[in-house]
Length: 336
Image 1 (cartoon, rainbow, N blue to C red):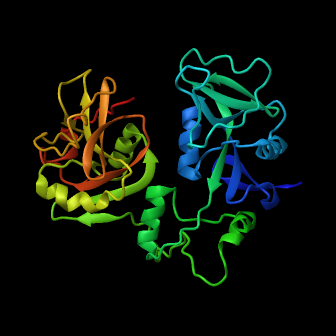
Image 2: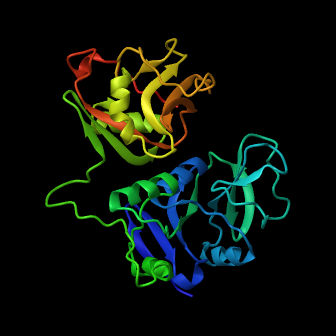
Image 3: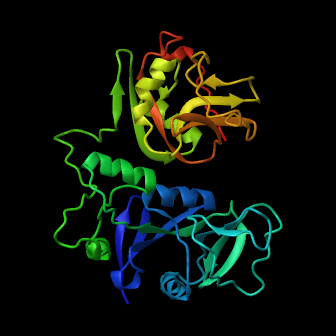
């Protein structure tokens, strides 16, 4: 049975032909070597997540794709250091396994992740680099929304509105289109010579942008400083009320607030603004997760989150209040 291929940046992706896919899923073999967490982040940005293998039928499909003697990360991991601690990263129940003989054997150490070689599963340290398998899941949403509201819904609950990069990918979803009801897809006319327009709110001194890309806090900070001015800072109730519409849904979104115990005490804004206003969810919202703690907005409230989590984020362009130019601020990049 053939496999159809297509180019994707510097990697090689392979989409299984439609008859090999379980309903509503497409699978992509990514020919790049990454750690397990890097592979997970890549899959979540480009597709849906690292693959889960839920039954023997899916195992047979994957085995037909695996290159002999080449290890591939899948979405299974164990962070509880116990025999019963195995979980799929996408939340699927672990009701099927296909371990190699004498595996698993490393769950008593640090967080352990699972790879597949020659169809057999084995555990390994998550910082090792292997190729990996992503999947894209398709959902028909029977709710009536305009295009922008539909995209916000998909970004909040899934990955994005559907896109088609090949005829094979479209065939996988043909059964979701009943032929009578129009359904939104992710294609949008951007206008001549224009770039993608992120949702934004303009004020006299700043323009705020919601960046619909999933990054950890440090990556978000770097992105904002490269493309805008910085991660957002919120100085008062008026600014909070003005920017609140950008924080859609219940998914956390990074802002520029952090606590860096290694260099300073208390909470600081990355752009140097004075920390004089807060909107914490409750007294537990400021719990510390290590020497560097980062803040996200969830359902309108501020919460301290581990900085390695990947969320969308808010950037802004405009003058930094405390200084007359960007060169005066602390431009040290805080790394995880």
